[in-house]
Image (cartoon, rainbow, N blue to C red; front, side, top):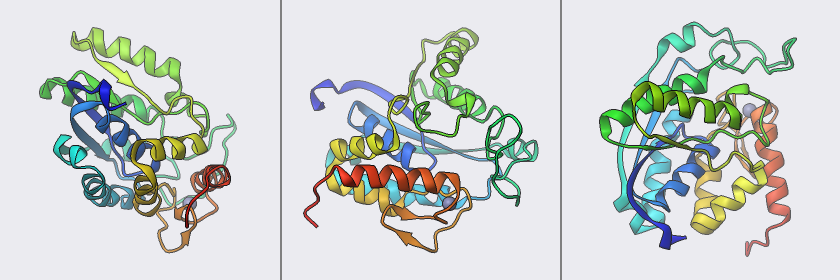
Length: 241
Ligand code: ZN
């Protein structure tokens, strides 16, 4: 894997969650330089963004080459996205399925907005590779996480900004157990432990209870998915401890 390092720079959408932390390790294993971007949009779990600094420090400690490749960390404020959304991520309402079968944690167009802002930042930074943790395989059915959506947006961004961007989604066809396995392959038990301890996934912003898979309320859809993936991964993994 280390033989395939390019001298290019990548920009990783990095929220501080399990998926984006794994994507960041993926990029650090492939690109000579890696920058990150996170978004503030009025989400209740701003705690996820607070996890970013601890994850960045941890990644630097795992491999010296990762520390040397890790570049600037950007944050973009998009408060309008939060004020326009009547969802459980930005307002104090319960998470449930709506009439269309989508959870009300769905922020319409969120990933389209994120990737467009990321591309605008990448344009200014002279970066063409953009990496995101969108996943069609084991997710809540968000239409802006689907491979067709990402490919269409890639085409639109390239036309609209006249740049040959490449949107990379290394988790697109992985379930959550496979995402844990990818983290182990990239950074061994140290990376698995870092992501388990310091990444944040819970929709409710709960970090009071430590489960075997990390912190969270344990019952929201994001916690349920993370717990299920961890159990499947752990069942297939022999750990010395
Ligand atoms: Zn939760």
